[in-house]
Amino acid sequence: MILSLASLLSCGSFSTVQLGVKSLLLHKLRSGLTMLGIIFGVCSVIAMLAIGEGASYKAQEEIKQLGAENIILRSLKPPDKQDEITTAGRSFEIAYGLKYEDGARLQATLPGVRRVLPTRLIRDSARFGQNQAACQVIGTLPFYPEIVPLDILAGRFLAEIDERHQANVCVITASLAQKLFPYQNPLQHSIKLGGVYYSVVGIVRETNLPEQRAQAGDVRGETLDQFVYLPLSTTRSRFGETIVRGQFPSLQFERVELHEIKIRMRDTAAVEAADPQVRTLLDKFHDEDDYEVIVPLQLLRKAEQVKRIFNMVLGSIAAISLLVGGIGIMNIMLANVTERTCEIGIRRALGARKRDITTQFLVETVVLSIGGGLIGVLVGVLIPFLVSQLTDYVTIVTFWSIAIAFGISGAVGIIFGLYPASTAAALDPIEALRHE
Image (tube, rainbow, N blue to C red; front, side, top):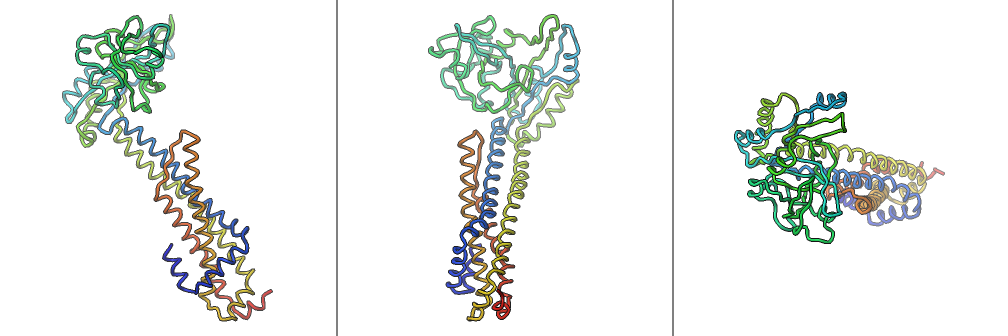
């Protein structure tokens, strides 16, 4: 674009360029309205790509927090058992989901596995004195922080001795600590879950809260940030493996041993190799589709592919605005040629060459497009900034989107200005002087 403009300047004298700019300044309102198409086009390209880039970034970050080297297994209630619950009017028990034996088999037979983390999830209420808060009990093993990002704010996490002795100890999240212990140090007290007291030994904060966490067998329950971590052995002995739902006499007893198993592999190559093996192994010991397999690495790659397609679609839609702006410039410049036919004849009669006339009109279109492009860039950067400040939406303005939008705006000025410029230069001087 810059080279093209330089070549235009070299085709005629500097006075010709000045004349083109002066012609635009004589009709400020018309020039400003003509630039609006380019302004809106450039602005929409940058703003739409920034919003799309932000949405894609947020989705990819949430997937990355699940761990690219992890494979996540979650218990899933089969559809036939769901129908059984809704139609039955009596008490009964159903069993489904992942089992402790599944975790042991995966640890023993899966090549490239580093850790297998079984987890139980139970919705409950935690109490301390008169304070009470809804929470989710997470029964897990001491190496939980190696797989799930976790910041230990005070105290410690669960230890091997807690797991071996089914200790009545717990670790709670900072948000739950604020609700239960607004004025006390949680590490000096115990909380009550059900009818049992658990000593608080640590306060933590998870860093992957955007993840949709399973809720006591319902893998699509609401996300909470008030967690209580217990040793898996303690959870199994204190809470059992049966969840009671409904009201008497229509009670449903759901038996679920494990709600989630996270498998940490050696590297991403091991994840790709292990995915089909995990499904094959589980299918051999599960008669129903009572589990789901989530591979964050695959989700991440799909998200990146969707991002590319999304950017192409948004860019194409926004580019139409630039095309419309270019058509508007061409329309105005053709009207200018007709309006200034006599002026063109006089210039030609005084010795102006065809390339001088071409340069004059091209300068006008390029100034309109570049000026509109610069304003469009400023507005296009400002809109995503305002969106981020006024909402929780993430927007990312990339350099390449600005370069593409501004480059296209300059190209539009040259491409759509060539025809009016050549039309003006091709006018016969004598016929132009006769024009009224």
